[in-house]
Amino acid sequence: MDNDKEHKVLTLGPISVLPKYQNNGIESELINYTTQIAREMGYKAVLLYGDLNYYKQFGFKE
Image (cartoon, rainbow, N blue to C red; front, top):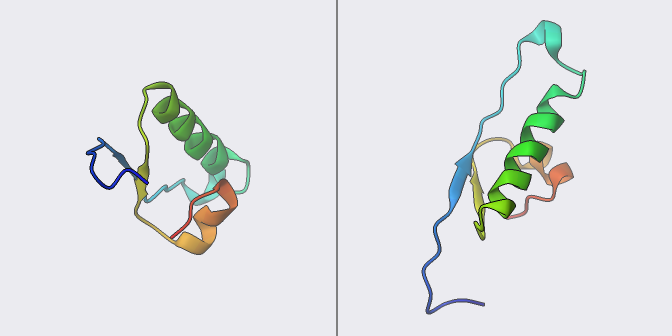
């Protein structure tokens, strides 16, 4: 644990896609792309705004 260090973090959410485009994987692509870029940029955490139960499938946790 890095209790004595500061880290810059990003925020994400809530993700929203127009109803006619939902259930086509767009939400997953947006979340996966964002977290991939965050890792590549060296961020240690992404703070989430939204329904944790939905985002858990992408590895987010409390």
